[in-house]
Length: 252
Length: 321
Image 1 (cartoon, chains in turn red, cyan):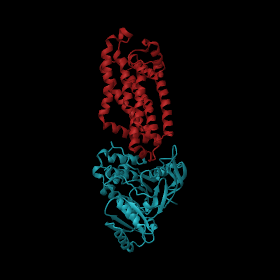
Image 2 (image 1 turned 90 degrees about the horizontal axis):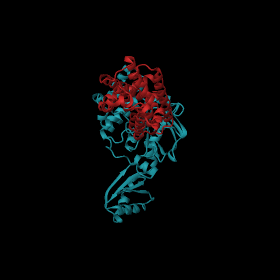
Image 3 (image 1 turned 120 degrees about the horizontal axis):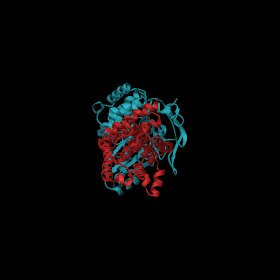
Image 4 (image 1 turned 45 degrees about the vertical axis):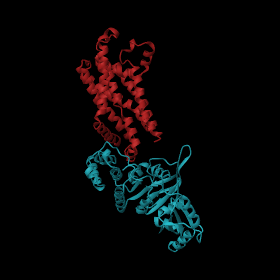
């Protein structure tokens, strides 16, 4: 399968790129951990009385995960860079299957996401987040990280292909922050006021967050996990369609 | 079979910019074809269509016998392309970049490494192979780009302004590689805004202006088509003097074509050697002092000027060096 082989080759190229720019990855790790530390520091002593969460460290861990995944989604920016440098054309002139050009970078994002999330989980466990679902649950969290990364990064990739512009790609971050905070990031959605609870209910990120959280706090809850994967699949369906459409109608 | 063939090939950009307005090409295998024109003449658009990167909006083109629209994959297997402004990934090293390309052309890891090594030697980059491309000079980047285009032993090589912005030594090196490749049987389609480059490398030249081909033939044919010698006179003094001298020279016997180019007057006249004395006489009589006078056979520059009404304006050299 040329597609798999070439995607792998291009993924390695993209990973090599990150290894050579380590400051970026350090930033991607620092920001979620910093927010994790200050949020836990500020709220954990009152979280039990305020909204009945005794293990606020574990409650916050998936938020740091999702932040790290969003931060490491650089496929779109990478593609814009390749397009602007003219290197994308160079790659497009090889017989490699077209989707590999995009998939290689997306897979690299997923790998980065898994590595960063692995570090974050380790930090979480060391600081008392606990992991009710055990090692297998940890593994599943990494799978969620990879799957969410792939579905999420597709959004920026489609904008990159369509416009070849960095500004458009920056938009994808603007999209993520509302999604993350219109979800039960700091408190369970049961304590939200009506409008916010409604938005959180229709926000797919809510279910990814709650599914991941259930693995940390409660152990194995198939219903929640199913909803998490359904939400990821939903996001993926949208971003994959967008990417295919963007490639077909590409200007640049 | 032609290596490259096109009929009424056209590309219109919205709303109605006719970048390429219907051109015909018939290039035989093993030739070096020079595609001459200034920025915006449609050269690059033509190359992008012939290399399957851009869909034509009119006409058709076949490269290595395959239609560029319906059979792009087969075309890409057989062509090597070095695009304008060497599009390279600057974070990789030269060796990594060539190995990657060889792999994408279907080679195994080991074979790809060997091919990369070979190509690095061909373009004299072995010593810099493990440095990142970002640190390469303009000339080195072009050489690497050329090497990347050669990974799969293409039958036809497309070079879009391969030497624009390079210093003379780097340019000379690129010319040498291109000539070598052509000797090995590779057909070369070369766009350039340097007349010297076309003259030096190309078996056949097409002059592109405003989306159409205005002249085509071997450099010798094109120069002979002028049918005259070229006498260039530089009068002493400024604009007014030059214009007046041109007026005077238009009254020469046979009323030759006279053009003002910068501070010189160019006279297209048959048997230029015999015309020098009358030119000097006429100007002296009209009170014009002459700083310089030269007689030359027509160059491609004269052909270009004749066919398009303007000089080719090349981008300044050293821009990316």
